[in-house]
Image (tube, one colour):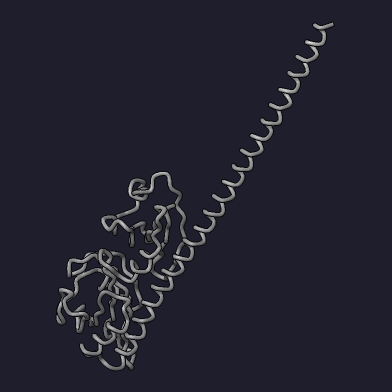
Length: 254
C-alpha cells in the first residue's frame, strides 16, 4: 500500500516537472521569437530609413550640381552680351559660393579673367586640359571627369558656352570644384556623418570617388578593397543622380 502511494507521488511529481519544463520551454521559445521578430523589424526599419536617407542625399547632390550649372548658364548669357570685367567676376564669385574658382575662357583656351586671385593661374594663361578642349569643341554645358588642372589641383570642371548676340561662339564660363579641398559638395555631405560609424561617399559613372571622408581615395576607382575601406561587416545603401553628361551615386555605409 505504502509502495503504491510512493509510486503515485513519484509519477505525479514527474508529470508536474514535465509540465513545468514544458511551460518554461514554451515561454523561452516565445520570448526568443518575440525578440528575434522585434530585432528583424527594427533592422528592417533602420535599413529602410537609411535607404530613404541615401536617396535624399543623392537628391540634394543633384540639386546642388543643377544649381551650379544654372549659375554658370546665367553667367554665360550675361558674358555673351557684355564681357565680364575682372571686378564683375570677383563680385559674382563672392556672391555665389558654389565654386572654388570661376574663369572666363576664350575659343583658344586662353583665360580672359579668373577669380579668386591666388589660384595659381593668371589671366592670359592657356589651358591645356582635355576637359577645357571638350568644352570648346562641343559648345554645350558639360561636367568633366576629375582631372589634374594646370594649377596642380585635382578638380571637376563644370562649364557653360558663351554665345554672342549674333550667335557667334566666344568661349565658355568654367567653374571648378577642388576635390581634395573644401568645396560645396563636401560641405553638403560632411554634415551627414554619424557617430554610429556610418558615412557617405559619392562615386561617378566611371566608379571613381568624387567625395569620400578619406581624401586619399578621391579619384580612385572603386574596388573590392577600397569600397570596404573602414566598413567591414557594414551594409551599403545607395541613391543615384543622373545628369546629361554624368551620373553620380550617393552611398551610405552603415
